Length: 143
Image (cartoon, rainbow, N blue to C red):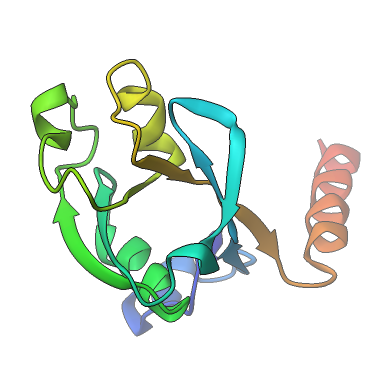
């Protein structure tokens, strides 16, 4: 099991003897949807009101991550797997719109110039990869 953050008590019980590895998401560079070669640090929007769009499970994690980076976030949560249309982005023309990579793929063809992707990288705790490989290799030997 790879968890994003600590497990709840019920999740810990359900995991039982299954190895649990914690991961964290990190990112700091934005890519403009209309021109992916153009990038800016998240700090470029520090102190400015931005609109954060997220059609993912638990969108509040995305919003909280942006706030933790010093952004003034206006939340625009959408259902997981939302099928975006241009109308979904037709608001606040003078303010930046930030979204997850998952959402950016769906909006790239009709995104306004002020829409930005916030790509993140998942990192797992030190030594976790070695423990996972060890478990996989041990499983092969016993099969």
